Length: 133
Image 1 (cartoon, helix red, strand yellow):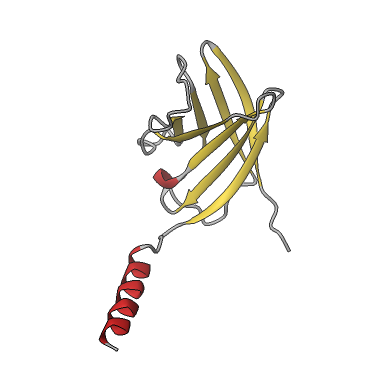
Image 2 (cartoon, rainbow, N blue to C red):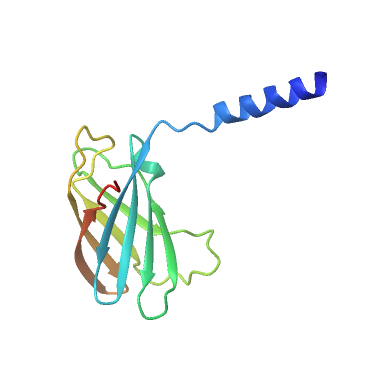
């Protein structure tokens, strides 16, 4: 009986530590070469991530936040995840999102972004995913 009680207490305490103080909202954007899925962590912007999928090869690259927005710039830059061994990091590979806040009362319907690879940049808009009924 003691063992069962200890196991229940352990499972319950581990569940308490895994709670998040933010919610994910999903945004999508597409160019002729790739599509982007942004997982925006509303309430903790550093928890956000981007998955970029190349349309020709179906290769996925994970991008993580470099740092929190500083001052009034309200832009945030993502770089390829260095722990992802399948990614070949190229020169100047980044994704920058504009007009970003750490926490939103009302989430925007679209987010303006720039994706840079080597010396080429692409402007795109990420649109909020529609809620499923």
